[in-house]
Structure formats: C-alpha cells, structure tokens
View 1 (tube, protein in one colour):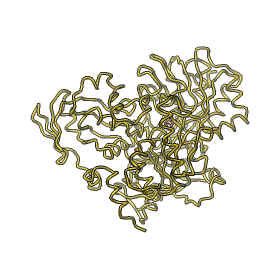
View 2 (cartoon, each protein chain N blue to C red):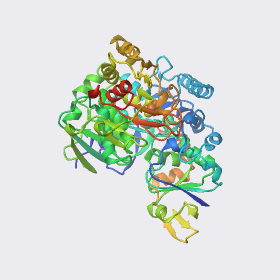
View 3 (cartoon, rainbow over the protein chains, first blue to last red):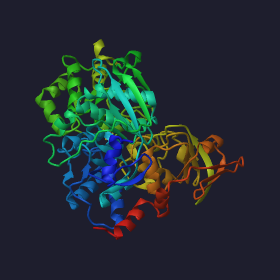
View 4 (cartoon, rainbow over the protein chains, first blue to last red):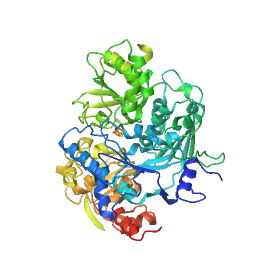
Amino acid sequence: MGMTITEKILAAHAEKDRVSPGDLINVKLDLVLGNDITAPIAIKEFRQIGVDRVFDKDKVAIVPDHFAPNKDIDSAEQCSMVRQFAHEQDLTNYFEVGRMGIEHALLPEQGLVLPGDAVIGADSHTCTYGALGIFSTGVGSTDLAAAMATGETWLKVPSSIKFIFKGHLNPWVTGKDLILYTIGKIGVDGALYQAMEFTGEAISSLSIDSRLSMCNMAIEAGGKSGIIAPDNKTLDYVEGRSHRTFTAYHSDEDAAYAATYEWDVADIESQVAFPHLPSNTRGISDVGDVAIDQVVIGSCTNGRLEDLRIAAQVLKGHEVDKRVRCIVIPATQDIYRQAMKEGLIEIFVDAKAAVSTPTCGPCLGGHMGILAKGERALATTNRNFVGRMGHPESEVYLSGPAVAAASAIAGKITSPEEL
Amino acid sequence: MIYKGNVWKFGRDIDTDAIIPARYLKTSDPAELGKHCMEDADPEFVHKMKKGDIIVADENFGCGSSREHAPISIKAAGISCVIAKSFARIFYRNAINTGLAILESAEAVDGITAGDEIQVDTDKGEITNLTTGKVYYAKPFPEFIDNIIKQGGLISYVREKVKTPVG
Ligand code: SF4
C-alpha cells in the first residue's frame, strides 16, 4: 500500500519508514509560529518548562499581526511582551510593524516554509502552507510553548480526503471560490481531523496565490491540514526565497483515501458564504438582493497580489458606492510595495477605497473597520461567525476579491459580470 | 475526577468566537476571559450558570480559531466539564493541554436535557444523568493522551521530558 503526500512528510519527520492514519507520532518541526494573541500565553507556559532558550532561534517565528499596529493599551502590552521575548531569545524571524505582514502571507513569501516541511503554528490558519506541499497545522498556545522548547510536537496521523477538480475555471473564479464550494458541499466538520488533498487539472491551473487561499480555509471544513502536491509553479515560487534544501513529496498511485470527491469546475461559479457559517454558500447567481455597508479586501485568505490585482481590475474607473466603506489591506509590506509599483493603490484611492497597512484588523473584529449593530459586510476573509467583525448582531458574508470589489461599487452583493 | 452539576445545552458548530469573542483577546488573564464565556452564544450565560455546571453540546464544539483563550475562559467561568458529540481538533488539544475536562458521547448528548443534573466520572468516562437515572459511557482517550492528562497537562509532561536531554 502506498502513502499520501501527508503520510510521507509525517513519516520523514517522525524518522519512520511509514505511518498510517491514526498513529500517534512525535514530529520534528521545521518551523513553529506564534502571533501577538497566542504567543503571550505560550511565553508564560514556556517559562515554566525549565529551559532558557528556544530549541532553534531560526525556527521560531513570531509575527505581531492581529492587533498590530497596537490598537489600544492592552494590545500594546501584549505586543510588548512578545517583542521582549523575541529580542531576549534573539529570534531571527521576529517581524516588527513596518516589516510585518499577516503571518500566513508572510512566511511563504519570506521563504521560511518550503515543500516537504512540517510546521505548526498557534493559529488555526497555519494550514495555509499546504499549498506548497507542506504539512502544516494549527495548534494552541501550550502546544506552541512545548514546541518552542523541544522542536517537536505530538500528532495523530490524519486520514486524507482527495478532492479532484476537473476542467477549466469560469471567468472570475479563483481558489477562494473552489474552497467555499467545497466547504458548502461537505460542511464545517466535513473533514474533521483529516487532511484535505486538492488535485486535478483545475488545481494545476491555479496560481500559487490561489492555492494558498484554498489551503487557508481547510480548517473551515474542520480539516487538520490542506495540501497540494508541488509542481513547477511551486518550484518557481520557492526559487530564490531560501537557501535551505527541501523535498517535494507526491502521493503514491495506490495511496489510501478516506473519501474521494470529484467535481467539474465548469459547474462552479463565484461563491458567496452567507452568515453565520462558511458552509452556508451559494453561487453568485442565487444571492438575490443583499445590500452591504462595508467591503473588506484583505486577510490571510485574500490579501495577496493576485487578489489586489483582481480587485483593482474591477474597481478601475469606478467609485465605491457612497453608502459603502471599502477597506483594502495588502497582506504584507512586499505586496504593498508591488501594488504601489503596479499602480493598484492609486486605483483603490481613486475609487474611494481606504488602504491600510498590513494587519489582520477587521478580519477578527480587532480594529480598522468594526461593524455596528445591524451592519452587514462582504469580506474576502475566511470566517463569518456571529460577531466575527464586530457587534454580535452584525453580519459577515464571504467571497473572493472580484465579487467583493464589484459589490463595493454596486452597494450590494454583485457579480463583476453585472457591472 | 468526579464532577456534579446542572446542564447548559448548546447546538452544533459552537465556534471559538461564540465561546470568547475576539474583542476580549486583548488579555490572557483567565479571570477576565471567564467573565465573557459564551457571550456571543448567550449573553446572559455567565450570570445564569453556577460554578460546577456542565456544558453539553452537539457536533464540532470549539470550531474556528486556535485560541486557547476558549477553554481557559470556560474553565475560569467555573464550568467543570464539556460533553459533546465531537470536538473541533484544535479545541480538543487545547482542552487537554489546559486541563479542561472534555468527554465525547453522542448518546449522552441525546439523552440529556437542559437543566438536568448530571454526574461525570472522568477516570471511568462515566456520565450519569441524575435526573433520569440513565448512565452513558464516553469514548476513552488514547493512552498517550491519557498520560498527558495524568501528568497534569502538556507542560508538566514536557518538563519531565527535558530534564533528561538526549544528544
Ligand atoms: S487575517 Fe484573519 S484569519 Fe488570517 S490570521 Fe489574521 S485574524 Fe486569522
């Protein structure tokens, strides 16, 4: 019996010839990650373990991105605590405001995670890096503390579900639409504890940015990880970003899957998730009349260059509706700079959108665009739970950047085709 | 451990934003987090519940973010344990790591009504509905996880491990 890509990566990091779903293993980690919300608890726990130094100062990344730039005194205290720890431990990969970006956009961009790696992060969207053929998963702060001390973590080997996407993508459809469609089909616990492996010609045709959006939301189906086998696009992407050697793993032909789904992407149009679950999806043609107060284009799901290019393409020559606040948040400083070079920022400002420095900001209801009671937002983020972006009686709808930009212009949820 | 308390029932897919909304993540102080436990699922929850009470929920409890603030807030509010049909995986890890007792039993969830008084023996995985007299058994933990629980959580487990470094 062959192994899946996930099993191969885990076996290699557990120093075993093979592993099977259900095995409890100790995994050696290539990188561990914390942020300004999860690291403070981890640091307190780390101090109780009885070691002075982290296991490897190059392999612990800390990114203050959630409530940074500091939104108030309490969050300033949290950021200050992680900053002191990062300096005390002389961490190579601590990213201060001005260098910082949203962690899951930043780490792949900086070449800190490479194909074949095993990565954990105290953030649920750590599964994003699977797009590069990496096993990566979210854990809690105590797991992070233990991993910072030992460089290892315990994991149960997940079974894998295979998702085959055939055919050619419809106009404006990106990775975000494919993953929303998938979650809509299988539900928010459809892949509980499992690895979601995305494959097929439509996946091969996706850009790396789109693949990152897809794997980012594996957690929204309950998944432990999302993964896409590395191909030439992956190798081109990582080229020049790191000097570290890496291994490209692929699933064997006869690997075992807990389930297989096969869809023709010709049947998939732009998707919108209605409140209050990411699985509550509809095709854009079934949305009906939904007026909105705010549009957010950003986050670790859709704040990358491809997303900004698409949004700019739609917004160019238009203006945001007078009743709508449109907030655009490039996910990293490099993306910001490139968006400036390409004139995208100018298009946003001309269209009367507000452009922010990289931050998670409104994605988790932190700052930079909180909703009042009864307000409704369309966001390119990944969660639309009750109260996610502000008041418990506000609403969040989710979409990709094309629909978000078109909706900002129309003042209601709209397909770019209708402009 | 044996816990006894009254039941508060919740549906499926109770997410971490409902358990502890992100607007309160400016601190990691358990007492402060406990004050807002379950606030976006039931704003009155912390005022209605009593210390030792038990949360019983459907599938996928704790889905969403990795915030350990969620089990910390439940524990700090005074909830003694959580029984669900299934838990989201990061929440499951976090509960074990922070010492919040959790049990998985679909039968118990279906057989228990809000307000029932129940008794939970976490060592045996035995859930007794004192109101109806029915007894249910939770899925036992894998041995490895049981060891972490017996050692008092992941930190004590790792503390022991790093005392005898190899290589
Ligand atoms: S952008 Fe949103 S989902 Fe992504 S890491 Fe930040 S808060 Fe989490």
